[in-house]
Length: 223
Image 1: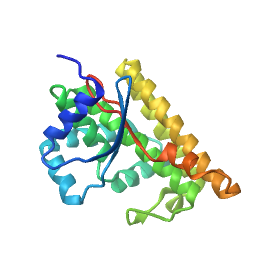
Image 2: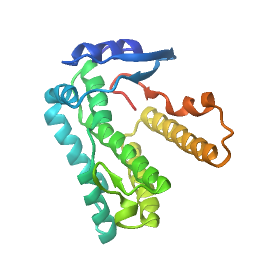
Image 3: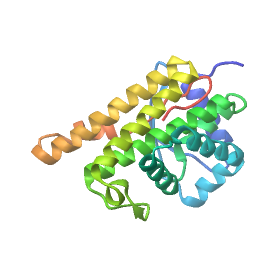
Image 4: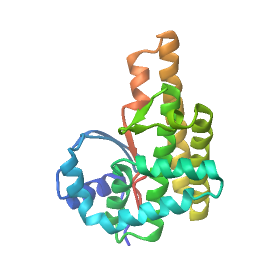
């Protein structure tokens, strides 16, 4: 199977999508594409996801497998998290990238579940940091349980994601996720520093938050 570079795979994803995906901005650097996607209406996203129904169901099954735990509190929290899951936009992008370069393989489904798992971990930590009471119309983990449980649960989700990446046996996605997670953490610290000191310029603040990193290689997009 021929390997596509970032721009070729991105164009292929746009061709496969049944509705337009608009790239607002983009740069290319050694096979990586840094893009910002125009917000999609709910109906448009549903149309994009319709051909991926079986694969997205498999992603949800993987999510349940990865975060399954016998410890009662963890089991209660993960059950609530799965009820709070969002539009599955990030797994959708990864699966589309996989289709653009061939058939969707079990490895792609596992990586798509990891993408969503890391996203859930960031939401759990964000809600705790922001003291948010609701997420998608439901109580947040920190509101329903406690801030301590929210912090530890976010760490639990990150650790499960790392375990799955190690099991994949490929350093490329592990390196990408490690870098992106670090950049998100720095972005959060910049936001907190801005609240505390109001000394960060708009340019410095927007850079970590204002783009979605889509690393599109031979078998998928990683964020």
